[in-house]
Image (cartoon, rainbow, N blue to C red; front, side):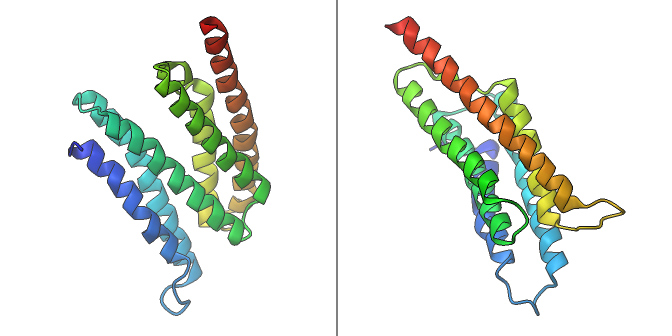
Length: 190
């Protein structure tokens, strides 16, 4: 397993998941709920930024590796899944959004693995629709983690759930896009 800064940043994201989770289970006399919310939001934002940054550095420094290509999406999906489950348990978002997003991530991850085994990983490479989905999803999760119904006149929970709805629609759309790409690939092969 190679060790470099991009891999370190990816491992850091994985290690932040239990820290992020434990925040919501601390005794109330240790930290007030809004401090927990802001701290969790900051940790999530750092994880989202390092997700972009580790890939950028790996390409810039030519330090890409098969292990990094494997670990990076795993770290992302774990962080998002844990955040969604926490938000559902805190009653800040809807189960259906979490089911759609987590279900799609599992489906596309399995599809990518299958296509990689066939030597056709590029047929399910990240597309613009996937990037839009990720942007809406990350913004929604961030707002819902802050969880303020009145932040300078804005209901962050309502805005977060609107973005979560948009992310869910884009999630379904991108899943069908990837499935269509794989279907074309398979039709050409046969």
